[in-house]
Image (cartoon, rainbow, N blue to C red):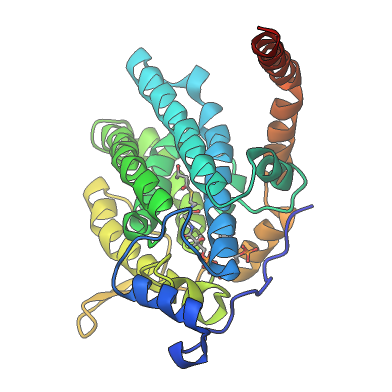
Length: 330
Ligand code: 3HC
């Protein structure tokens, strides 16, 4: 039901000497730090890579509303409810900016939705896990949005102009999302009861490893990283960003009095970074292949939303056709 993980269309990077003149000039523009805009010539692989990444990113924002939307009616106070509602709406907005950015590359929104609904397109693995308690909402903000920021701040410098510009606003909003999540956990851990602290620890135990998987497979197994980095779509490798995330998150967990569920986690003086254990990559592959705890539920919800909106889309189209016919008759 879900796209398979390994589909290599950009595994090897060609040297500048191997490129034809047009492609060489394109690569030189990238190397000089120039932005590529929609009407510029670009290699087909660059276009395909961007459509793949931006549409996956957009789908992640849209599907990402589901685990949190589940808690809007159960947020513990009116203030928390209003904040969560705003956050979930932000995610919808991010999806829309990103679909617009992808459209500039020559794919239609309908095609992208169709890829999602038919299971041909991926979305972030993280959203196939359930939100079991209010502490999960805190952990999503802290860890999931935290990992998203770590990955997305460098995307503001992506070589493709429309994607880079969309990321500026998205990153600002993601920072607020991260802080709202951490704030929930500060309240629960520092002012809450033993039971609430246990609830947070339980949530961290479940969200830690899936959050590390958000950065993608290890560099040795990453199909697209080398070419995407040569094209400056990605600025950092999956492992580099995962390491940065661990290093930033460990002190935050300590402040909350939580234990990161990794017995191999230790400060490495020589590297000036944390050593940490290996995520369960078999679990990651299972989730990517449609067998995570909530894959069917998530896709089912998106398909149902699309079907439920058919009458509205038809109404809009009928209105648009009438207007066009009216203008033509004048
Ligand atoms: N979940 C699902 N699929 C994943 C994945 C993950 N966590 N990590 C990697 N993959 C997929 C890739 O898409 C690729 O599949 P494909 O060939 O069918 O497209 C395959 O696994 C191999 O991985 P690579 O490392 O070769 O792929 P990339 O170079 O594209 O790197 C990435 C993966 C780091 C996720 C990169 O695509 C990226 O930076 N994307 C933009 C950011 C993004 O999409 N973030 C989603 C996070 S959630 C979010 O933003 C919502 C927010 O509100 C929290």
